[in-house]
Image (cartoon, rainbow, N blue to C red):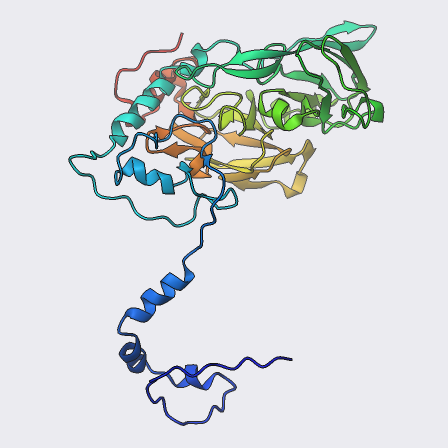
Length: 444
């Protein structure tokens, strides 16, 4: 074995000749605080920091969050301003390697000056919250997750589906992007069947490229698994493919493209496939008394960080009555893990990937959902107010212009506040949230 020999530092102070009897380094064992300060004079700490500073490799330019205009505009920011300092923040970096974590240390922002005024974070943050509470999400066209009723043909539940190129808006102020949709929406329709149902899903490809559809989480015949060149030929433009199987695995599942999937799923070819237990007593409305069953599909590709195809402030709030029980089915169709955090009350986690956890169920307020995973949670709405509900990777949720991306709210209102779940701002005020004292239009 090679022996590591410590070099002798020149002009080092005498540290004594006491032999080491502990097995420790005699230099380290005998050095005193006074000797350390006499040698270092404070410079040792600085030198150690400099020696440990991360080396940032040069690499291709990248922006963070992807495709977002919610964060600071770097190109027009004056040097030394808070916005310019964001070049060394999670919002964007022209010199950072893609392997660099957005949370790595950076230089602090310079103090505002007359030539570089401070960004008005309060005004910008309030403006997007007003848009959210004013009902921006509900005002937008082509909502996803709309239940699709099947036709029943000889006892088979038949879903007629199209796959097409669409123009999709992430929020009301951003220009539409070139997305993809099942039946014209992102996410596609919510398909719900019962355990043991025979299912026939017919997909007509109206795109200009080939595709394939995978029913994620279902145990189905191999030739219906939806992976082109493995189990089937691609569905060419203008062609159709019929998937037929018996729904066996109960719970929360997905259907999505499995061909050029990074692009196609990232652009919107995704949807929820729910298999209810055959025994009605095992369904969430009976088992937990749930009165709302909410699909929550996250994505983080085209259009940035989205919940059900929208980014804050166009995400849809959840409005519940005090004492109500709701179920949320988290589904991650993106490329990153997202830890969902609810303020004010806990989530009781009851199923993973469609399988009931039983005695392994647990309670938390932050739940990490990996790509491809589904987690079902039960929330008892016991605390009135408007509670933030967001991804706790903060770069996915808030920047210098306020909140964006993976943010919504759970608004819990008193039973006397009104029977409608639509007027979000009014419900928030009725629930006692003083932050929403400004006049905000009611939803229609």
